[in-house]
Image (cartoon, rainbow, N blue to C red; front, top):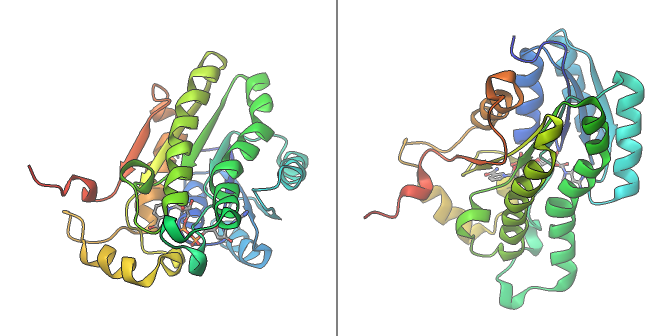
Length: 254
Ligand SMILES: NC(=O)c1ccc[n+]([C@@H]2O[C@H](COP(=O)([O-])OP(=O)(O)OC[C@H]3O[C@@H](n4cnc5c(N)ncnc54)[C@H](O)[C@@H]3O)[C@@H](O)[C@H]2O)c1
């Protein structure tokens, strides 16, 4: 098993991609802390992890609030004694409040940047000294192709995801000498409940734009990449952003 005896803390893992990451990492031997705003959903995933024969803990957190995040990490350390893998996966756009930038408001940007970008900084800050002291650890960030090529109606979200990719590179450079690796994964269109957050008109366009591989993505497609990056098979990989999109951003023909 690729992650035997590891402890993984996965944010936003009550649903969608995060749930798939939690289950895949558990299958590969890791104990899992399921951290989410939705404690009921996290509890259900914790039961699924237990059914795979692994230890689990459901913990409520709002990743945009540093005090919440610090409490969450304290709870996880009290239970498991360490964090080997942090997956910063919690995120999303502003659901029905998402709109074209020229109609947007500062209140919505604060919300979107808070969950997606500040959330990654808060959680990384809360575990990084622990990883530096142990001279090992892996931080994986869920970015998005929106952070690479932009997304209509989600300029704030795209800015946050682009920021995550830049943060990943910077933190990787700072902590490589301590044996800590940092990487980002950029999903394309993945079939999860987050679809409901995309403005309807844009969603129709997205769904028409099937990836060259002939289908939309599944949460497991992202979970497989995350699990590989978390494992020692990826020991020589840090600082990069891995696109898992079925080839969709290559569709501009030349
Ligand atoms: N689905 C896609 O097509 C797609 C594409 C690219 C990137 N992503 C990214 O993948 C990640 C997971 O998305 P998903 O599609 O699984 O969405 P999802 O809505 O199914 O899951 C997101 C989870 O994050 C949790 N969450 C939201 N705000 C939170 C907060 N402040 N603190 C803690 N938890 C919070 C939610 O409760 C939910 O369980 C997100 O970062 C998203 O931006 C998704």
